[in-house]
Amino acid sequence: MPAPCKDWSVKLLYVIAALFAFAAPATAQADFDTQAKFAVLMDYESGTVIFQKDADVELEPASMAKLMTLAVVFNEIRAGRVSLKDEFFVSEHAWRTGGASSGGSTMFAELNSKIPVEDLIRSVIIQSGNDAAIVLAEGIAGSEGSFAAMMNELAKQIGLTNSHFTNPTGLPDPDMHSSARDLANLARYLISEFPEYYHYFSESSMEWNGIKQANRNSLVEMGIGVDGLKTGHTEEAGYGSVTSTAQGDRRLIAVVHGLGSMRERTEEGRKLLTWGARAFERFTPYADGAVVAYADVYGGENSSVGLVGKGEIALYLPRGSRDCLSATVDYQSPLIPPVMAGDEVGKLNVFCKDQLVQSAPLYAASTVRQGDLVRRATDALKQLALGWL
Image (cartoon, rainbow, N blue to C red):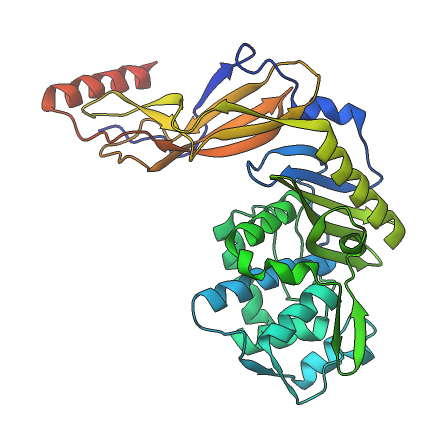
């Protein structure tokens, strides 16, 4: 039996101008630019990237890496290994590296004290407390290094393809990196997977040890609907933020980074979110259950299986513009039976002028079991002939 392809390089190209009589997100970028070196604007519901600027270039995440720290903590709480009421010890390492004497953002945690997990989480989000992040890491994994391994393992599960974490704080490390796209996808994961904790991101201030600090994300208090998520800054990387806003039934996620000041960070984040909220409209090319393409099945009772999205596949496209989109469907060809309904077997990639603007997983629409001997023999001959060609 011929072996299936080992990669996802088999692409079925669909020129879908007739179906998508709309402009693509990449076209609209001519109408907008940002001073940020790196930027992404993503529609939360569909995952559509409607603006990007060096979205996949490696960057220093600074304190935005704490979003990955929070993802690990929330997963540990969901698994029952940690609770919000647990108290973690403030070690000398956490106190010296992330405390008041460090000169960085801090909770002002007292050496050898114990702090509830919920307060540590709030400090990481609101105050960007480096000491709080280290205390959480040591309380969960024993050390920053072990916790970083958990961060990287979860990053792979989430699908972050251009990130590597070495500590829970985001303090400078030459081996730590992420990308604007990964940070947007990380924010989307946090919002969708842990809605019960999302309210922490919109709290305006937090007081600990008699010291009150405002939320470092100044957009939260601007009255434009921003309710998260995290800012970051180092001398080398500049100023950046991962923010989100909900207006009506639509939520956007914005990432800007590499800016020269807090004022620029606030203004560029605001401009990107405002433009995205006003310039685009929702378009649904594939309804729930609609077949996007067909994939070959080797030796199955049927020679192919329909591929569908999980729910409808929606795009946000610029208002009043017209252009065409193209798409590819990638799958490991041919599929080997049994293929069960609901199995994730492929991916829809939507492009404009060779620029990827959205990817969506595709699933088998029906079950295809192994075919009879005649069917398997016929498919074997077809595969052999293709191999000769």
